[in-house]
Image 1: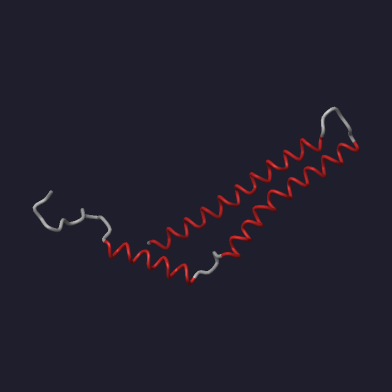
Image 2: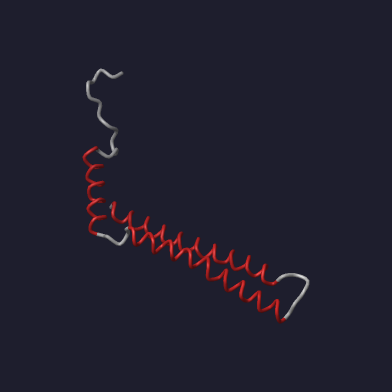
Length: 112
């Protein structure tokens, strides 16, 4: 223990008042910028859902057409359904990563 009753934080460490100020500014900014809310979240879920569903259904439809016109030993429907699902998942991952990056960049700009 030190002999001093109140030890000082190390140099360069943010003060309590500074931390409170940053959090208050972030809350005020969130109140002004109402782009992210319940409807935004539901819209994003819909966007992610459709970005998976559309390629999956297109792959299945193309597979059904190929199975009717060019039958073979393997099912085109199943193969293209899986390919469409993988493409849709990659597409959804891309959208979510893009939005996450934009949110973090915006948050970084607000902290300065």
